[in-house]
Image (cartoon, chains in turn purple, cyan):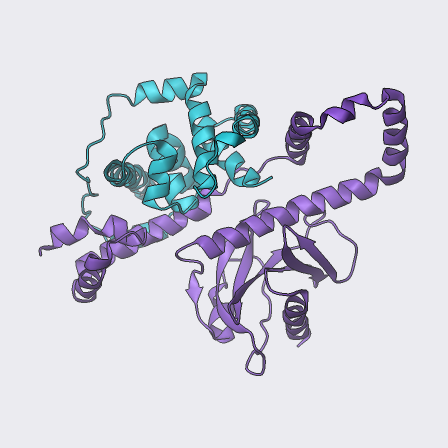
Length: 251
Length: 164
């Protein structure tokens, strides 16, 4: 087969959509043809650059609340309209006075964590979940150099059940951050390391353990960085990985 | 709310305007809520949501304008591959800044922009893209190929201007 015919198949190849019966032949050709290999590389680069650049617009908190309210109105049960309006207003006023600040913090935190859960799920669903594939922390950490405005330490995992799978640059609230993927038995855990700024994941100080959408999360702030672990494995597993990361941060 | 941030990002890329993107996302969720009974369990929820958003966009003024401006640009099932350039593209691409990619995406016709976003950003399979856009798999591949060619041409022009 000529290069021109192979090049026709490179689009599907970089999208991980090559038919099974063509894949081995195409990969063999790429090993031996510098021109097609360079073409495939440039396509992959453009795909990655596009993915990073296309995460550009984030909805405002005000808009998210507006949508949530409009959905809640649409789904409000009929009996709700029977309640005396005065009583509802009084209860709402008391609740607002007592808990508005706490509610806003909680709501903003849940939204931020939901967004991170979306990123975690999207990563697991991806055919290329990580951009740097390595079990070696000395390979993964330097890979982020020049890509992030901060650095971080990774734990030694030799004596633990966790396995480092790799990492990628992610974008959260318009800022770049690291997303590390760890394996534990059949589970995968995402660790997001983000530059802390006011309002990013508003929460109280210390280690926070949350269950959201059936995922287990643990988050804490250390040295100006916000760490968030997300996984479907048990809270104990998530906490154990958190301890390893905190120990590494102090080393 | 599932997919909220991602749908908003996609809507903003389609409409190119914050207020219009918000209206589009709001309308999408309301339509999804009203029509949830029509969603077939076991089918692709993500593609269903994006299809509602995209079909809603096509009924807006901006969407009608976008679809009219590309109506002569027919799809066929023969993929059109990018032409080779004299300089290795991997070297050229490495020089690109994020805003150059964003500007190129903005300049693409909507039907090219949306298919690149669904494939590269949302990482949808060709089948999912076909489901979302309501087009057969062969058309997905040919349109994607032509979209990427158009994007490369825009980026190449930008790089050539920058190097002068």
